[in-house]
Length: 301
Image (cartoon, rainbow, N blue to C red; front, side, top):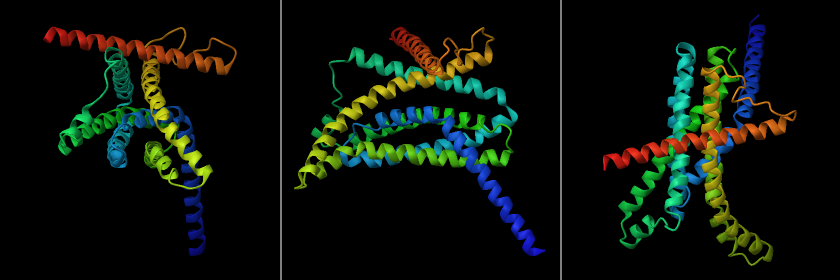
Protein backbone atom coordinates (compact mmCIF):
# COMPACT_ATOMS: atom_id res chain seq x y z
CA UNK A 1 0.00 0.00 0.00
CA UNK A 2 2.80 2.38 0.95
CA UNK A 3 4.70 1.49 -2.23
CA UNK A 4 1.60 2.15 -4.34
CA UNK A 5 1.10 5.55 -2.67
CA UNK A 6 4.75 6.45 -3.26
CA UNK A 7 4.47 5.50 -6.93
CA UNK A 8 1.30 7.57 -7.23
CA UNK A 9 3.12 10.54 -5.66
CA UNK A 10 6.01 10.17 -8.13
CA UNK A 11 3.50 9.97 -10.98
CA UNK A 12 1.80 13.19 -9.80
CA UNK A 13 5.16 14.94 -9.53
CA UNK A 14 6.17 13.79 -13.00
CA UNK A 15 2.84 15.00 -14.42
CA UNK A 16 3.23 18.35 -12.66
CA UNK A 17 6.78 18.80 -13.98
CA UNK A 18 5.65 17.87 -17.48
CA UNK A 19 2.80 20.41 -17.31
CA UNK A 20 5.16 23.10 -16.04
CA UNK A 21 7.69 22.31 -18.77
CA UNK A 22 5.04 22.52 -21.50
CA UNK A 23 3.59 25.78 -20.14
CA UNK A 24 7.06 27.28 -19.72
CA UNK A 25 7.99 26.44 -23.32
CA UNK A 26 4.72 27.94 -24.59
CA UNK A 27 5.21 31.09 -22.49
CA UNK A 28 8.80 31.58 -23.71
CA UNK A 29 7.73 30.99 -27.32
CA UNK A 30 4.92 33.55 -26.97
CA UNK A 31 7.30 36.15 -25.53
CA UNK A 32 10.15 35.49 -28.02
CA UNK A 33 9.60 38.76 -29.88
CA UNK A 34 9.74 40.87 -26.73
CA UNK A 35 12.75 38.89 -25.50
CA UNK A 36 14.62 39.83 -28.68
CA UNK A 37 13.72 43.47 -28.11
CA UNK A 38 14.74 43.15 -24.44
CA UNK A 39 18.17 41.82 -25.46
CA UNK A 40 18.75 44.60 -28.00
CA UNK A 41 17.62 47.36 -25.63
CA UNK A 42 19.68 46.12 -22.68
CA UNK A 43 22.82 45.49 -24.72
CA UNK A 44 22.55 49.05 -26.02
CA UNK A 45 21.83 50.45 -22.55
CA UNK A 46 24.83 48.91 -20.79
CA UNK A 47 27.31 49.46 -23.63
CA UNK A 48 29.91 52.23 -23.91
CA UNK A 49 31.39 51.90 -20.43
CA UNK A 50 35.01 51.25 -19.49
CA UNK A 51 36.17 47.76 -20.41
CA UNK A 52 36.99 46.81 -16.82
CA UNK A 53 33.53 47.97 -15.68
CA UNK A 54 31.43 46.24 -18.36
CA UNK A 55 30.71 43.04 -16.46
CA UNK A 56 30.05 44.82 -13.13
CA UNK A 57 27.57 47.09 -14.91
CA UNK A 58 25.87 44.10 -16.59
CA UNK A 59 25.72 42.35 -13.21
CA UNK A 60 24.23 45.45 -11.55
CA UNK A 61 21.50 45.69 -14.20
CA UNK A 62 20.87 41.92 -14.01
CA UNK A 63 20.35 42.19 -10.23
CA UNK A 64 17.99 45.11 -10.81
CA UNK A 65 16.13 43.04 -13.41
CA UNK A 66 15.69 40.19 -10.92
CA UNK A 67 14.36 42.63 -8.34
CA UNK A 68 11.98 44.00 -10.99
CA UNK A 69 10.61 40.52 -11.61
CA UNK A 70 10.34 39.76 -7.88
CA UNK A 71 8.07 42.82 -7.72
CA UNK A 72 6.23 42.26 -11.01
CA UNK A 73 5.36 38.54 -10.80
CA UNK A 74 3.28 38.66 -7.56
CA UNK A 75 1.67 41.97 -8.53
CA UNK A 76 0.61 40.65 -11.95
CA UNK A 77 -0.68 37.40 -10.41
CA UNK A 78 -2.71 39.24 -7.76
CA UNK A 79 -3.97 41.78 -10.30
CA UNK A 80 -5.12 38.95 -12.60
CA UNK A 81 -7.14 37.54 -9.67
CA UNK A 82 -8.61 40.66 -8.09
CA UNK A 83 -8.12 43.58 -10.52
CA UNK A 84 -7.77 42.24 -14.08
CA UNK A 85 -9.00 45.59 -15.41
CA UNK A 86 -5.85 47.27 -14.05
CA UNK A 87 -3.34 45.34 -16.17
CA UNK A 88 -4.15 46.96 -19.53
CA UNK A 89 -3.92 50.64 -18.42
CA UNK A 90 -0.67 49.95 -16.54
CA UNK A 91 0.75 48.26 -19.62
CA UNK A 92 -0.32 51.20 -21.79
CA UNK A 93 1.43 53.65 -19.46
CA UNK A 94 4.55 51.51 -19.73
CA UNK A 95 4.17 51.43 -23.50
CA UNK A 96 3.95 55.23 -23.60
CA UNK A 97 7.11 55.44 -21.52
CA UNK A 98 8.98 53.16 -23.94
CA UNK A 99 7.78 55.25 -26.89
CA UNK A 100 8.93 58.41 -25.11
CA UNK A 101 12.38 56.96 -24.37
CA UNK A 102 12.79 55.90 -27.99
CA UNK A 103 11.66 59.26 -29.37
CA UNK A 104 13.88 61.11 -26.88
CA UNK A 105 16.90 59.11 -28.10
CA UNK A 106 16.08 59.98 -31.71
CA UNK A 107 15.51 63.65 -30.88
CA UNK A 108 18.73 63.84 -28.88
CA UNK A 109 20.71 62.24 -31.73
CA UNK A 110 19.24 64.77 -34.19
CA UNK A 111 19.91 67.95 -32.21
CA UNK A 112 23.32 66.69 -31.02
CA UNK A 113 24.30 64.77 -34.16
CA UNK A 114 27.77 66.38 -34.28
CA UNK A 115 28.34 66.19 -30.54
CA UNK A 116 29.94 63.28 -28.72
CA UNK A 117 29.52 62.06 -25.17
CA UNK A 118 32.76 63.10 -23.46
CA UNK A 119 31.49 62.64 -19.90
CA UNK A 120 33.67 59.60 -19.23
CA UNK A 121 36.72 61.21 -20.88
CA UNK A 122 36.37 64.35 -18.73
CA UNK A 123 36.05 62.24 -15.61
CA UNK A 124 39.17 60.28 -16.56
CA UNK A 125 41.13 63.49 -17.20
CA UNK A 126 40.40 64.80 -13.73
CA UNK A 127 40.91 61.27 -12.38
CA UNK A 128 37.57 61.33 -10.62
CA UNK A 129 36.46 57.78 -9.86
CA UNK A 130 33.38 59.20 -8.16
CA UNK A 131 32.31 60.92 -11.39
CA UNK A 132 32.82 57.73 -13.40
CA UNK A 133 30.79 55.72 -10.91
CA UNK A 134 28.06 58.37 -10.99
CA UNK A 135 27.90 58.09 -14.80
CA UNK A 136 27.64 54.31 -14.52
CA UNK A 137 24.98 54.58 -11.81
CA UNK A 138 22.84 56.77 -14.06
CA UNK A 139 23.12 54.26 -16.91
CA UNK A 140 22.30 51.36 -14.60
CA UNK A 141 19.21 53.18 -13.29
CA UNK A 142 18.07 53.93 -16.83
CA UNK A 143 18.59 50.32 -17.93
CA UNK A 144 16.72 48.95 -14.89
CA UNK A 145 13.87 51.40 -15.48
CA UNK A 146 13.51 50.29 -19.11
CA UNK A 147 13.87 46.64 -18.07
CA UNK A 148 10.92 47.07 -15.69
CA UNK A 149 8.58 47.97 -18.56
CA UNK A 150 9.85 45.18 -20.81
CA UNK A 151 9.69 42.65 -17.95
CA UNK A 152 6.10 43.68 -17.20
CA UNK A 153 5.17 43.09 -20.84
CA UNK A 154 6.92 39.69 -20.87
CA UNK A 155 5.26 38.50 -17.64
CA UNK A 156 1.78 39.61 -18.76
CA UNK A 157 2.19 37.88 -22.14
CA UNK A 158 3.46 34.73 -20.42
CA UNK A 159 0.48 34.76 -18.05
CA UNK A 160 -1.91 35.08 -20.97
CA UNK A 161 -0.78 31.64 -22.22
CA UNK A 162 -2.00 29.90 -19.04
CA UNK A 163 -5.24 31.63 -18.11
CA UNK A 164 -7.01 28.31 -17.39
CA UNK A 165 -4.20 26.86 -15.28
CA UNK A 166 -4.45 26.70 -11.46
CA UNK A 167 -2.99 29.69 -9.60
CA UNK A 168 -0.13 27.65 -8.10
CA UNK A 169 1.00 26.46 -11.53
CA UNK A 170 0.78 30.00 -12.90
CA UNK A 171 2.97 31.29 -10.07
CA UNK A 172 5.53 28.51 -10.50
CA UNK A 173 5.75 28.84 -14.29
CA UNK A 174 6.03 32.65 -14.15
CA UNK A 175 8.82 32.36 -11.58
CA UNK A 176 10.72 29.89 -13.81
CA UNK A 177 10.18 32.06 -16.90
CA UNK A 178 11.24 35.23 -15.05
CA UNK A 179 14.47 33.65 -13.77
CA UNK A 180 15.22 31.92 -17.07
CA UNK A 181 14.81 34.97 -19.28
CA UNK A 182 16.90 37.11 -16.92
CA UNK A 183 19.78 34.64 -16.99
CA UNK A 184 19.50 34.21 -20.77
CA UNK A 185 19.21 37.91 -21.66
CA UNK A 186 21.97 39.20 -19.40
CA UNK A 187 24.20 36.21 -20.12
CA UNK A 188 24.02 37.15 -23.81
CA UNK A 189 24.53 40.83 -22.97
CA UNK A 190 27.70 39.92 -21.04
CA UNK A 191 28.97 37.94 -24.04
CA UNK A 192 28.20 40.80 -26.44
CA UNK A 193 30.02 43.48 -24.42
CA UNK A 194 33.14 41.29 -24.05
CA UNK A 195 33.53 40.40 -27.74
CA UNK A 196 36.25 43.03 -28.20
CA UNK A 197 38.22 41.66 -25.23
CA UNK A 198 38.12 38.20 -26.78
CA UNK A 199 39.38 39.73 -30.04
CA UNK A 200 42.31 41.37 -28.24
CA UNK A 201 43.14 38.10 -26.52
CA UNK A 202 43.16 36.21 -29.84
CA UNK A 203 45.52 38.82 -31.35
CA UNK A 204 48.19 37.60 -28.93
CA UNK A 205 48.11 34.20 -30.62
CA UNK A 206 50.76 33.11 -33.09
CA UNK A 207 48.25 31.16 -35.19
CA UNK A 208 47.12 32.95 -38.35
CA UNK A 209 43.58 31.59 -38.10
CA UNK A 210 43.17 32.88 -34.54
CA UNK A 211 44.69 36.24 -35.54
CA UNK A 212 42.13 36.54 -38.33
CA UNK A 213 39.30 35.70 -35.93
CA UNK A 214 40.65 38.25 -33.45
CA UNK A 215 40.73 41.01 -36.07
CA UNK A 216 37.21 40.08 -37.17
CA UNK A 217 35.93 40.26 -33.57
CA UNK A 218 37.56 43.67 -33.09
CA UNK A 219 35.75 44.87 -36.22
CA UNK A 220 32.52 43.17 -35.15
CA UNK A 221 32.34 44.59 -31.60
CA UNK A 222 31.80 48.31 -32.44
CA UNK A 223 29.67 47.46 -35.49
CA UNK A 224 27.46 45.22 -33.35
CA UNK A 225 27.08 47.85 -30.63
CA UNK A 226 26.13 50.51 -33.20
CA UNK A 227 23.61 48.11 -34.70
CA UNK A 228 22.16 47.29 -31.28
CA UNK A 229 21.84 51.01 -30.55
CA UNK A 230 19.60 51.37 -33.61
CA UNK A 231 17.79 48.08 -33.03
CA UNK A 232 17.25 48.91 -29.35
CA UNK A 233 15.64 52.24 -30.22
CA UNK A 234 13.44 50.65 -32.90
CA UNK A 235 12.51 47.93 -30.39
CA UNK A 236 11.19 50.59 -28.00
CA UNK A 237 8.84 51.84 -30.71
CA UNK A 238 7.77 48.32 -31.71
CA UNK A 239 7.09 47.11 -28.17
CA UNK A 240 5.53 50.38 -27.03
CA UNK A 241 3.42 50.67 -30.18
CA UNK A 242 2.35 47.03 -29.86
CA UNK A 243 1.21 47.63 -26.28
CA UNK A 244 -0.77 50.69 -27.36
CA UNK A 245 -2.37 48.78 -30.25
CA UNK A 246 -3.48 45.99 -27.92
CA UNK A 247 -4.78 48.57 -25.47
CA UNK A 248 -6.78 50.30 -28.18
CA UNK A 249 -8.35 46.94 -29.10
CA UNK A 250 -9.27 46.46 -25.45
CA UNK A 251 -11.00 49.81 -25.02
CA UNK A 252 -12.30 50.57 -28.52
CA UNK A 253 -14.57 48.50 -30.70
CA UNK A 254 -12.87 49.01 -34.06
CA UNK A 255 -13.87 47.51 -37.38
CA UNK A 256 -10.26 46.34 -37.81
CA UNK A 257 -8.45 45.23 -34.69
CA UNK A 258 -5.30 47.33 -34.49
CA UNK A 259 -3.24 44.50 -32.99
CA UNK A 260 -4.47 41.88 -35.50
CA UNK A 261 -4.43 43.45 -38.93
CA UNK A 262 -5.56 41.14 -41.72
CA UNK A 263 -4.99 43.04 -44.95
CA UNK A 264 -3.37 40.31 -47.04
CA UNK A 265 -3.81 36.62 -47.72
CA UNK A 266 -0.26 35.99 -46.53
CA UNK A 267 0.50 35.55 -42.83
CA UNK A 268 4.03 36.87 -43.44
CA UNK A 269 2.72 40.03 -45.15
CA UNK A 270 0.21 40.59 -42.34
CA UNK A 271 2.95 40.10 -39.76
CA UNK A 272 5.25 42.62 -41.44
CA UNK A 273 2.37 45.07 -41.83
CA UNK A 274 1.48 44.68 -38.13
CA UNK A 275 5.09 45.24 -37.11
CA UNK A 276 5.36 48.35 -39.27
CA UNK A 277 2.05 49.65 -37.94
CA UNK A 278 3.14 49.10 -34.32
CA UNK A 279 6.40 50.93 -35.03
CA UNK A 280 4.56 53.90 -36.56
CA UNK A 281 2.15 54.04 -33.62
CA UNK A 282 5.06 53.95 -31.20
CA UNK A 283 7.04 56.61 -33.07
CA UNK A 284 4.00 58.91 -33.32
CA UNK A 285 3.13 58.51 -29.64
CA UNK A 286 6.75 59.09 -28.59
CA UNK A 287 7.07 62.18 -30.82
CA UNK A 288 3.92 63.68 -29.32
CA UNK A 289 5.14 63.14 -25.75
CA UNK A 290 8.60 64.55 -26.53
CA UNK A 291 6.98 67.66 -28.06
CA UNK A 292 4.77 68.11 -24.99
CA UNK A 293 7.72 67.67 -22.62
CA UNK A 294 9.84 70.19 -24.58
CA UNK A 295 6.97 72.71 -24.70
CA UNK A 296 6.47 72.38 -20.97
CA UNK A 297 10.19 72.85 -20.41
CA UNK A 298 10.16 76.05 -22.47
CA UNK A 299 7.15 77.39 -20.56
CA UNK A 300 8.89 76.75 -17.23
CA UNK A 301 11.94 78.70 -18.43
